[in-house]
Amino acid sequence: MSNLINILQYQFIERAIIAGLFLGVVCAVMGVFLVLRKMSLIGDGLAHISFGAIAIGLVFGFYPLVIALPLVIIASLLIYALTRNHIIEGDAIIGILASLGLAIGVILSSIATGFNVDIFSYLFGNILAITQQELNFVIIGSIIIITILILFYQEFMAISFNPEQAKISGIPVTILDILFSIITAITVIMSVKLAGALLVSALIILSASSSLQVAKSFQNTILFTILFALISIIIGIAISLIINIPTGATIVTVNAAIFFFILLIKLLKSNQ
Amino acid sequence: MKNPIISIRDLSVEFNNIKVLDNINLDIYQEDFIGIAGPNGAGKSTLIKTLLNLNNYTGEIKLWDMPLNKFKNWNYIGYLPQSLNQYSHQFPATVEEIVSLGLISSLTWPRILDTKSIKKVNDILNELEINNLAKTSIHDLSGGQRQRVWLAKALVSQPKVLILDEPTNALDPEIRKVFYQQITTLYKKGVAIILITHDTSDIGNYAKKLLLLDNKVIFWGEFGDICNSKEMSNYFGEEAKHIICHQHE
Image (tube, rainbow over all chains, first blue to last red; front, top):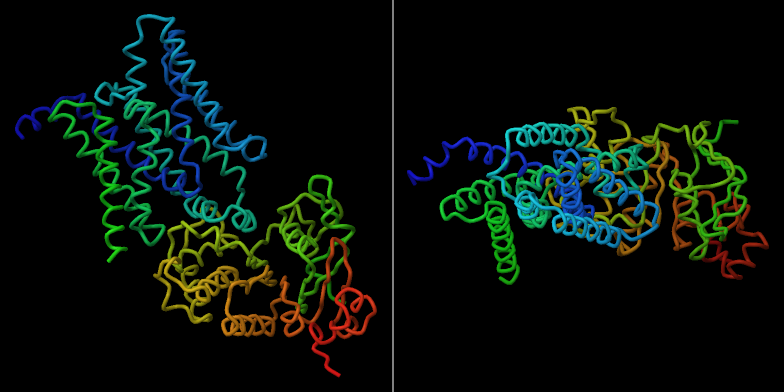
């Protein structure tokens, strides 16, 4: 225990905890809207795209997130535009762009040398390596996204319930869908360093899915999802530090354990 | 003569080069209770969705004298679609949360529910006698209770016209009767009603005008004018008078 307290005094651990708490809240709340809109897979797709985009940044010597952010936002808007106009099914275009992103990342990491350690920290996540600059990006990005979600809470709730009814209520559904695509892309980019491109979607889906099993109201769904995310982040970081295992994967495992525990209780209750 | 609240001129709608609505002309007034009938694929729901600005169209639609693309007062219209149950399948919400969504059209941004809005929600729940369900999850309701919640959502913004698309599908006869009594009460209070239903006897029982669609207007007018018409017998057979107009010799 005293070891853990000593560890917590390191600045890089402080940065990891602060980033984890901000990202946990943002991913969880975004997850509620994405799961309800049957867009859970978009997190996975955009994370894979971000892997390719980050590789491009590293190869050409740019700060990777500077390249990844616009590219992932463009990909997110492209997915929205193509699926909205029924040109291609959503899961198909997500699959295509995700595979392309991953393929670009693999090719660039094989032909370029010297940045493999960096690129793999984005693939598997390494929140303990988060820099002060990246932490600032996470804090500012999180505050912007949470502010948008608060200001458009009723609108996003109405669109998640029934987009057609939302449109009839005079809500500018297309504009808000575009805004939502952009903040989804920012959420994914911010989270890649925490969980890695392979596990970002778990951060987005798991807390929301746990919450949807227990909450009876929309407001409680949001509150429970934040609670489950914060518990997963705090316990996940603590376990990973104590037994020295990867932090992002531990957070996701704790999150999944909460989900399956709730599911088990629910199944047992329904069989009584 | 008062101005119509809904005015439709030369309206046509096409999907994939198939004309679903062809040259529709209608005027709907505040004092109307209209029943819309027609076979499957006749364009009934398409007509309503076009009025609600959800479809592309040719022709002219005016709502309260305002061209459809410039119309902003969506709180004037309450809409109860036929597919709401399917949308609510996974959605976690209480009755009061769902009903408060109906207020969005009358709120200005940022759309935060104030005490006045909360009172409106409570009032409509009281009026429809479901105030005891306010904190209940919509998944814990019976079919009849859920239908009242959808109705409360459509009515909470105090609309001038209520559009109902197959509202009593899957309701048992007793609940159906209560539902139509509530609709009739609203009509008497001055709310115009547009009712789509497959059940032509419901239209005969409650509506004052009939719009019979089959991609184009087959009949449009007062029941009294229509019941004895030749077109009616051609379309519904000789039983029409009994089934729709409730005229028994």
